[in-house]
Length: 109
Image 1 (tube, one colour):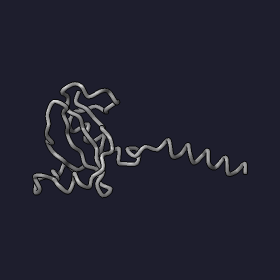
Image 2: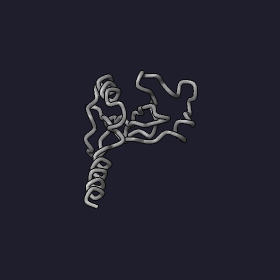
Image 3: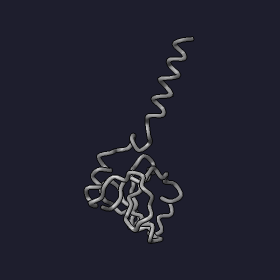
Image 4: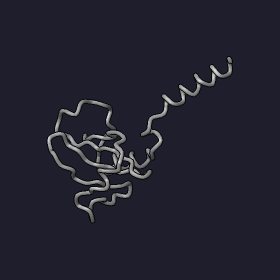
């Protein structure tokens, strides 16, 4: 009984300490932040007109979208290599139907 209790405590600690964004490729995120001269998003309220970098997961691949609370449009959806996902499909319908939002990972300086 004591071993089961200890196992459940350790399992709970392991589950709560792992965030989905931790399991994705942080090197890709860091590269995108550097490429676009952005800093890591630290949870501040998006009340200004800065650009924010949103991270999505689609079929195990990372995709990024620029967002700006002062603009109502998607500027681009791109992968870690900088490929524009919407180049051949301007409305990107498959992406928005199937991709999962992970987190806001960056903002402009």
